[in-house]
Image (cartoon, rainbow, N blue to C red; front, side, top):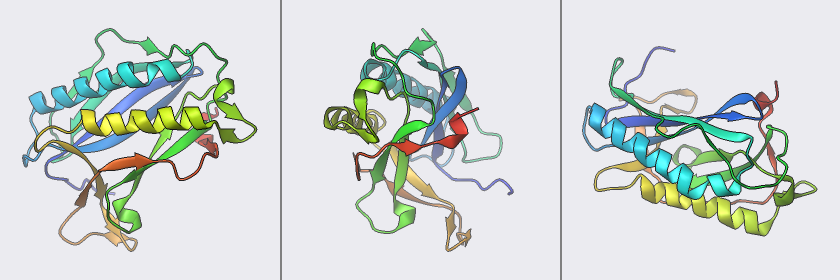
Length: 202
């Protein structure tokens, strides 16, 4: 698929080692400026790194290791990017045995609008044996995980800068006029069932 520019958008990615295998989470952020700058990318990456250290490390197992956070403009084909890795790698600190890497918990990202294009998902990795019973994540862990994602939304919101859902396709075809954006307002758990990310099993 050819590159499709998304004006104002920075793609923020967290790169991990999970049980010895690579893993990644991603969210889009609008800067409010048509062509995001390297400085804006650097600020977003730093905010993403601080958020993970402050909100995630304590509730994931030590084999969940954050290597770097990358923020890259997708407003143009060869836009600026920034990588934050100071003080990394940073491992989880929850002293419980970890589950296999395919076990995750899906947090729904909401915008207050209807339709699949206006929703997103964050697959939380690093679950431990103590957080899961049979095939369900315990209520305390669910509360902590959803609160962490709500804090991510807050951490990436400052003035015109805010996390968004970016929709490139509607009805199976590229959107006429380019992608559209839906500001993310909150996170929620639809259920407490463990989700499988089979690609994390190698």
